[in-house]
Amino acid sequence: MEQKNNELSRRSFIGKASKIGGASAVLGMSGAMGLFMEDDKEHVEAKQLDKQKHQKSPKKGDTYMLLNVRLESGYEYENGNVVATRSTIRNLEIKKGIISKILDTKEAYRRDIDCYDVQGMLLLPGFKDMHIHLDKTFYGGPWRGAVHRKNIFDIIEVEKKLLLELLPTAQERAEKLIELIMSFGSTYVRSHCNIDPTVGLRNLEKLKKALANYSDKISHEIVAFPQHGLLLSNSESLLREAMQLGATHVGGLDPTLVDGNMEKSLQIMVQIAVDNNAGIDIHLHEGGETGLKAVNRLADLTEEAGLQGKVTISHAFSLASLSPDQANEMANRLASLGISIASTIPIGKNAMPIPILQKQKVNVMLGNDSIMDHWSSLGIGDTLEKVHLAADLYGWSYEYELSQALSLATGGITPLDKAGKQVWPKVGDEASVVIVPATCSAEAVARLPKRAAVLHKGVLSSGELSHVKK
Figure 1 (tube, one colour):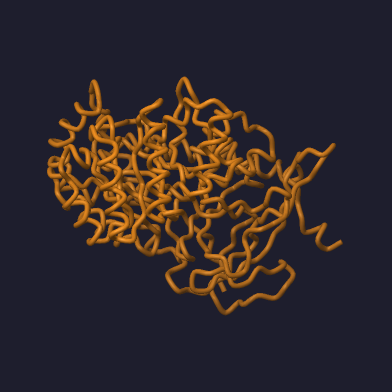
Figure 2 (figure 1 turned 45 degrees about the vertical axis):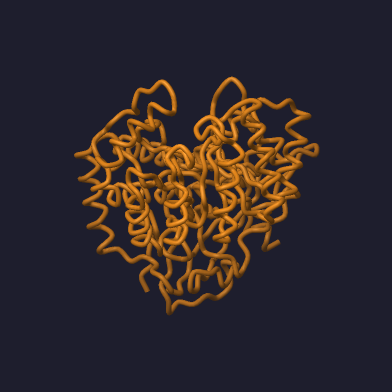
């Protein structure tokens, strides 16, 4: 009986949630406007910094309580269909970045440590932005639209000039971008970083400094990315240096279209990865048979080199040209080798076969890619918004589909498994979480609520928590 009283369904909570959600929508719009109004943005940032100086918040290594946290506990069914999500209120103890206790609200908890009242908001796993370019962006400065170009070679030439122009402020802009994605709930980021003869290793140096300044607030990986072509710009030696300087993955770019020699380009990329015991993350925009040939050859090389589980293909637009049967066959091959797909959920004539990839257990990850730069002006920085876009594109409109779609943003973690059993959070899990005014994952994906607070290994990285005075 006690459990029943302590659990709330989405339906019973909807009245309160609508009030919170309305406020969130207004706040969300205000935040979006701030991206484009520089004076207002600076004023808001100054106020936030002043507020943070006087506000209590969890720091690295702290032990503290999160009170009145909403956790999903199961699905409700009608005629065999999931129609709602149940939730329960719990108190969580966080110790040195780990969830150390999950307590019923009637259980005693420590009152000699800092306590923060979450006020019934929902706890979600931290989000992962697995494809972004933090090192080259207009964001953080005045508005600038994307650059006109006829093809990729045009923009490579334009970029050679732009990179030098942006270099003096590259670290500052990267830090602004890090703050943006953290505000949307990202606690993990994989950033591609230009490695080319124009800037050499300087973008990497700037990016490493920026990420070091936020090391307590977001985890990261860095891809050494030959944006101007591994072969075309003769960047092999630079890539090898970048790997020695801390890049975690070696990148590549369109081995046929840009480099003009698919086999040689892929072989060098794979060899650098093997020599450095590193992962691979290749940009593969090539469509149709050209792209499919590269995917299949990379799969062969992955197996030959023993790189199973260490290879990612970003974009992989050629998969959109496959029939369902062909997509299933390809997905089985990718899954068997542990090859991941990183997608921005592109909108076009042919949709990426993400549902098929997921069904065959391919690791599909999402990224925001370009945020207001010379390639694109449309990046928002919100990984949850990418899940929302996927739901819209693939027709995931029901409670169950929306709930499970959250896995795209979290590295595969969902509070409830496919059978509706609670699998997250558990004692011992890393306290990298997002707190939102919503009743369940499905609502969060559908409504995109404000991220009230974001914690990375227990440290407040964005938003705020209500401190309970002792």
